[in-house]
Image 1 (cartoon, each protein chain N blue to C red):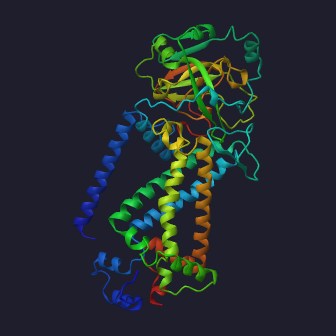
Image 2 (cartoon, rainbow over the protein chains, first blue to last red; image 1 turned 60 degrees about the vertical axis):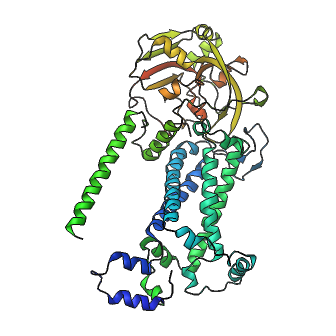
Image 3 (cartoon, chains in turn cyan, yellow; image 1 turned 180 degrees about the vertical axis):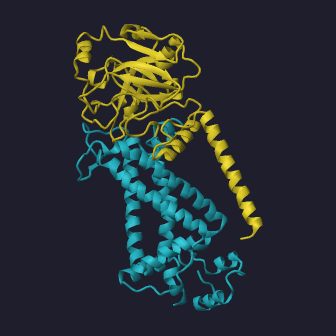
Length: 252
Length: 251
């Protein structure tokens, strides 16, 4: 994010200094779009969430019915059924894949939250300011999107209030929720923390809520991808990999 | 990059490697490495198993339910073995059936169903959940596995118990391991781990694993091997391990 200095002048200044003698730290803090720790955890999240959605679907297809309470099976009435065939088998080999990718999410989230607090990234980049936190700014952002109003170049490189709130909800509500409801189905973990499943209403309630959180996360992922495509897929993916805005866009 | 930095990064890398190797060594020593650690998803399996074994090291007890919670209709995935040797035993009320216990034990032995029934019995009302997603609650009655292992005197080097069932060629879900399965000693000696011969106050029904099945409280459904024939105590799993899916079923 830029503060005070325009992108063009900053860029010129960076280019004017011989690269070899320029201390790496100075250069990266000036034109840095994403902190290294944000990039690292972002790709851990991306790998984890994608792997979990695919392998989770493989488990889901073995019993696409949902219940409330402790028990639920084909001999019992369901809460709701998904219009999918019941295919027995894929859950067996999707389970190890699912838990493998779950660790990406857990390690990514722990790294992100600790680093986010230490670097003040959460406070500076995600927590909305008091003036932003009202119905009017939120509605105006949504209204701009509905009207298909093109975001200015500067705005495209910062987070608006809806983005900030969404990212905070993903990190502090959806991620913990999906890990909690997942662990609540584990017999071993529930022998140590039984309240984690009893407060949810039981094993099948945990499974149903796990599906609800997964659906919300999938919705976020799809909207995230749609927005990325609208705003410039290459430039923004590049920024999330290298940490810097692409030269061409920065100079605009 | 200067020489100093290179040297420093080399030292750091060396220290990290040494710490990692020590960590893995310690984990192996304390039984935190599952037998399928070297599979494609072995890193995840190892992290899950090690974390959960540390978490449950105090013999944590799974939730138990009341009689009124017992499901009216319990569910099974496949029917009992339909091959002749098993059917002949079943027709006779399993009178000629024996449970053999061998491997790393001081006194290999075999037990009749009556002998097992005359041992101290215990009942647990537990949730049974299939990895597919369905579940039911039932009461299981049997003898604690730790009691039987005490009778045959397990050798200290035993690390796993392998459960050999009667083969079930008719099993519809061939992908699921029906040949045999194994558990570590933490689950084998757990207070809620029993060899069950009764279900919901009746003789264990054929489809639910007659005459005898393993019933654990901290593992997922399919780890509870049915139609038991033999139990083998061993210190290595490489000769037994096969099939798809995870080895550890606590999650």
